[in-house]
Structures are given as structure tokens and as C-alpha cells.
Length: 171
Image (cartoon, helix red, strand yellow):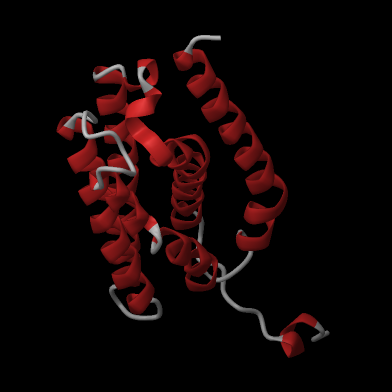
């Protein structure tokens, strides 16, 4: 099977698997929570996007990996990490919604731009250029993109208020 087909197959299966996990476990666990509680685990997940700096490390990736892909992907992930941590620190403040939106828009744009750049330079034709970061693109990036979609869903729904137990049982 050609390298591009292997790469595409890996990415598709990852999207399908993470979509199933999200539909069955992540979304049901988060959708009824107050917004701050719902986005907290997703922000923590994205706080690890600094790992994308590996796109700049020779030995982890091929020295021939085009900078047009590597630099925006690495620094976009680093910026998204910082934004996730800032949004996390702002939970419960008046800046919460604005910072979550900024994090989510920038993080989503970063991933979509990396897909665009990867396609533009035909990265799937030469996945060896990615070295060990192949697994980031094939396994982790689909999860990150899906969790951005979850955050959009959470931000667009009405903020669920915490209901006190005594109010549930009131006559």
C-alpha cells in the first residue's frame, strides 16, 4: 500500500475511533456540567500541545521536513498551549468566555492550517519526513480537533447552572 494511503488510513481510523469515544463518553460527561467544569479537562489536554515543538527537532523529524510546515505547526501548538493555560487560569472570571473562544479559534486554525500546509507540500507522500511526529498527526491531532469541536459545542449551548440538591427535591 502506498505511504499516502497508509497515512490516510491511520488518520481516518483515528478520527473514527476518537469520534466514537467522544460521542459515547466525553460529550455525555461534559454537556450537562457548568461551562468551566466542562472545558477544564479539554484545556488541560491542550496544555500538552507544546509537544508539537518536536516538529523543529532534527532527529525526531527529518532535517528535510519543510519549514513551511514545521515552524507554523510547532509555534501554533506552543501558542495554543499558552492560550489553554491562560484560559484555564481565567475560569470563573469575567474573561473566561473570551479567553476560551480565543484558545479554541486559534487552536482550531492551527490544526486546519497544518492540514493545509501538509497537503500543499504533499506530506502524506513522504511521511518519513515526520519521523516520530507521524504518531502525533495520526493519533493525537484527530483527538485535538475533535475536542475543539466539543468546546465549540459547549460554548454555543446555554451555560448550565449548578442545581442544588435541595431544589431538585423541592415540592
